[in-house]
Image 1 (cartoon, rainbow, N blue to C red):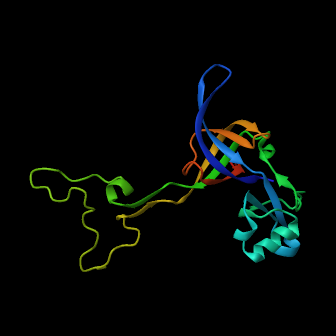
Image 2 (cartoon, rainbow, N blue to C red):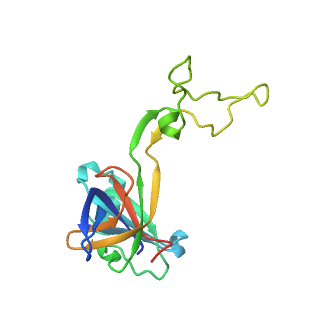
Image 3 (cartoon, rainbow, N blue to C red):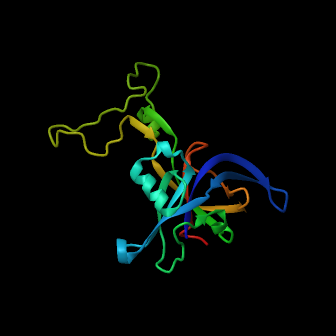
Amino acid sequence: MQGIIGKKLGMTRVFDEDGKQVPVTVLEVGPCPVLQRKTAASDGYDAVQVAFEGQKESRVAKPQLGEFKKAGVAPHRIIQEFRVEATDETAVGDVITASIFAEVGHVDVTARTKGRGFQGVIKRHNMAQGRMSHGGHSRRRPGSIGCSSYPARVIKGKKMPGHFGYVVVTTQNLKVVKVSDEDGVLLVRGAVPGPSGGLVTINKALKKG
């Protein structure tokens, strides 16, 4: 098993053996019960379907409630799949915890960034503003956006005002500082995308051990 679902709790600091402070992000990881084990023979690929964050039965759709009952797992709010190797022995009913990162040095964390709403080009694309005096009229405007007679349209991908933030971002190679299986907490060095309380997906780093 390579990954787990969690929640960003916030940032703090710890001290290493030399007494130097290390900025860390505290992640609540799991426990994630396994709902389904998909195989190449029956589904065309190998994956494990896990759940996170308990939920009331009344707030779960009946088809999903049937899946939970079939697996013998209490209803949960979040369901997600993780690709695994065909030789992986994870089975339905198993519970994935922070212990999977016990001997892992680095992880990749995926989350949605904070939403910033509708923003102009200066904040959204870091453009420079126009002069604020001596007859300047552009100030915070984007400037010309189109072409002349050809092609007489706005080119796709033009940097313009619009919705800023709330996109999926993966921060790679975050160093694992501490794994607490008893508390279900993982400490990683550095910042993680998204607000405190936001959902995150933690995977073993692809580029580092």
